[in-house]
Length: 121
Image 1 (spheres, rainbow, N blue to C red):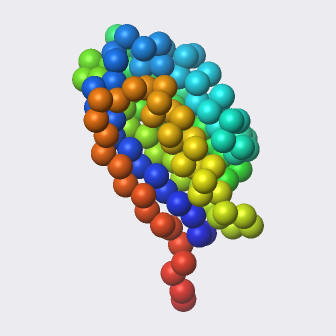
Image 2 (tube, helix red, strand yellow):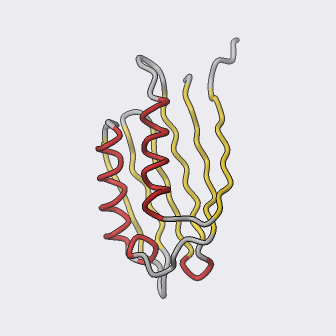
Image 3 (cartoon, rainbow, N blue to C red):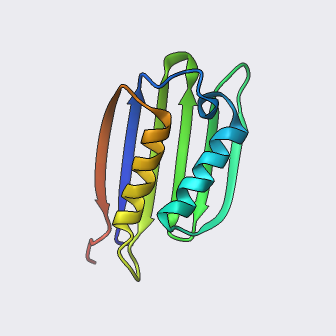
Protein backbone atom coordinates (compact mmCIF):
# COMPACT_ATOMS: atom_id res chain seq x y z
CA UNK A 1 0.00 0.00 0.00
CA UNK A 2 2.99 2.27 -0.41
CA UNK A 3 1.83 5.59 -1.81
CA UNK A 4 1.63 9.36 -1.57
CA UNK A 5 -1.37 11.31 -0.29
CA UNK A 6 -1.47 15.01 -1.18
CA UNK A 7 -3.95 17.18 0.70
CA UNK A 8 -4.66 20.79 -0.08
CA UNK A 9 -6.78 23.60 1.28
CA UNK A 10 -7.00 26.51 -1.12
CA UNK A 11 -8.28 29.95 -0.16
CA UNK A 12 -9.07 33.05 -2.17
CA UNK A 13 -10.07 31.14 -5.31
CA UNK A 14 -12.07 33.32 -7.72
CA UNK A 15 -15.72 32.46 -7.03
CA UNK A 16 -16.75 33.18 -10.63
CA UNK A 17 -14.60 30.41 -12.13
CA UNK A 18 -16.89 27.83 -13.78
CA UNK A 19 -14.95 25.07 -12.00
CA UNK A 20 -15.99 26.56 -8.66
CA UNK A 21 -19.72 26.63 -9.39
CA UNK A 22 -20.58 24.03 -12.05
CA UNK A 23 -20.18 20.26 -11.75
CA UNK A 24 -19.73 19.79 -15.50
CA UNK A 25 -16.90 22.34 -15.63
CA UNK A 26 -15.09 20.91 -12.60
CA UNK A 27 -15.53 17.36 -13.90
CA UNK A 28 -14.12 18.28 -17.32
CA UNK A 29 -11.12 20.03 -15.79
CA UNK A 30 -10.39 17.15 -13.40
CA UNK A 31 -10.66 14.51 -16.14
CA UNK A 32 -8.33 16.53 -18.37
CA UNK A 33 -5.81 17.03 -15.55
CA UNK A 34 -5.83 13.32 -14.62
CA UNK A 35 -5.22 12.33 -18.24
CA UNK A 36 -2.44 14.90 -18.64
CA UNK A 37 -0.78 13.56 -15.49
CA UNK A 38 -0.74 10.07 -17.00
CA UNK A 39 -3.03 8.43 -14.43
CA UNK A 40 -5.76 5.89 -15.27
CA UNK A 41 -9.46 6.78 -14.80
CA UNK A 42 -11.82 3.95 -13.88
CA UNK A 43 -14.83 6.09 -12.93
CA UNK A 44 -16.04 9.45 -11.65
CA UNK A 45 -18.93 11.12 -9.86
CA UNK A 46 -19.62 14.84 -9.48
CA UNK A 47 -22.49 16.53 -7.65
CA UNK A 48 -23.86 20.06 -8.07
CA UNK A 49 -25.07 21.76 -4.89
CA UNK A 50 -27.76 24.46 -4.88
CA UNK A 51 -27.34 27.35 -4.93
CA UNK A 52 -23.63 26.70 -5.56
CA UNK A 53 -20.67 24.46 -4.90
CA UNK A 54 -19.46 21.17 -6.28
CA UNK A 55 -18.13 17.94 -4.87
CA UNK A 56 -16.53 15.30 -7.02
CA UNK A 57 -14.31 12.27 -7.19
CA UNK A 58 -12.34 10.58 -9.92
CA UNK A 59 -11.58 6.96 -9.14
CA UNK A 60 -8.17 5.98 -10.46
CA UNK A 61 -6.60 2.59 -11.03
CA UNK A 62 -3.84 4.11 -8.87
CA UNK A 63 -6.38 5.34 -6.21
CA UNK A 64 -8.37 8.63 -6.29
CA UNK A 65 -8.83 12.38 -6.67
CA UNK A 66 -11.46 14.13 -4.54
CA UNK A 67 -12.29 17.84 -4.75
CA UNK A 68 -14.85 20.06 -3.03
CA UNK A 69 -15.62 23.74 -3.74
CA UNK A 70 -17.19 26.47 -1.62
CA UNK A 71 -17.57 29.45 -4.00
CA UNK A 72 -19.20 31.59 -1.32
CA UNK A 73 -15.94 31.30 0.67
CA UNK A 74 -13.55 31.10 -2.31
CA UNK A 75 -12.35 27.79 -0.88
CA UNK A 76 -11.43 24.37 -2.26
CA UNK A 77 -10.26 21.18 -0.63
CA UNK A 78 -8.40 18.61 -2.71
CA UNK A 79 -7.19 15.11 -2.00
CA UNK A 80 -4.92 13.17 -4.38
CA UNK A 81 -3.86 9.69 -3.33
CA UNK A 82 -1.88 7.31 -5.53
CA UNK A 83 -0.41 3.92 -4.80
CA UNK A 84 3.15 3.14 -5.73
CA UNK A 85 2.60 -0.63 -5.89
CA UNK A 86 4.33 -1.55 -9.16
CA UNK A 87 5.67 1.87 -10.13
CA UNK A 88 6.34 5.18 -8.37
CA UNK A 89 3.43 7.50 -9.24
CA UNK A 90 4.54 10.33 -6.96
CA UNK A 91 5.45 12.72 -9.80
CA UNK A 92 2.14 12.04 -11.57
CA UNK A 93 0.23 12.82 -8.37
CA UNK A 94 2.16 16.07 -7.93
CA UNK A 95 1.53 17.07 -11.58
CA UNK A 96 -2.20 16.47 -11.12
CA UNK A 97 -2.28 18.47 -7.89
CA UNK A 98 -0.25 21.36 -9.36
CA UNK A 99 -2.32 21.56 -12.54
CA UNK A 100 -5.58 21.81 -10.63
CA UNK A 101 -4.06 24.41 -8.31
CA UNK A 102 -3.12 26.55 -11.34
CA UNK A 103 -6.68 26.21 -12.69
CA UNK A 104 -8.43 27.21 -9.48
CA UNK A 105 -6.02 30.09 -8.74
CA UNK A 106 -5.90 30.21 -4.93
CA UNK A 107 -4.45 33.31 -3.30
CA UNK A 108 -3.08 31.17 -0.48
CA UNK A 109 -2.73 27.46 0.20
CA UNK A 110 -2.25 24.94 2.95
CA UNK A 111 -0.54 21.70 1.89
CA UNK A 112 0.20 18.30 3.43
CA UNK A 113 2.04 15.40 1.85
CA UNK A 114 1.72 12.06 3.61
CA UNK A 115 3.66 8.91 2.78
CA UNK A 116 1.30 5.97 3.19
CA UNK A 117 2.23 2.35 3.73
CA UNK A 118 5.55 0.85 4.59
CA UNK A 119 4.35 -0.47 7.95
CA UNK A 120 5.46 -3.97 8.82
CA UNK A 121 3.64 -6.75 10.56
